[in-house]
Length: 69
Image (cartoon, rainbow, N blue to C red; front, side):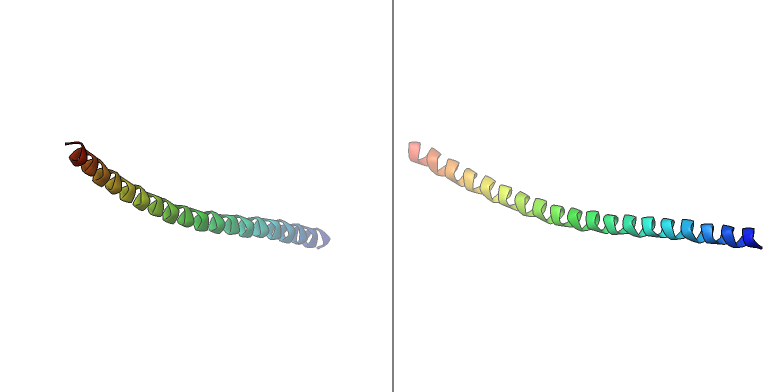
């Protein structure tokens, strides 16, 4: 019986270690997911700014062309 208890204790320790590792992996995955969402939103904002600057540049070029005529 002593061996069975020892094996059970070892199994519990192994299971606990795996559980802790799994929990930590899920935490890291959530952090990465949150960071990717923030990065995606920032990228959207930057693309909007680029589009606005592009339109502004086109308007300025148009005005310059008409001023040089």
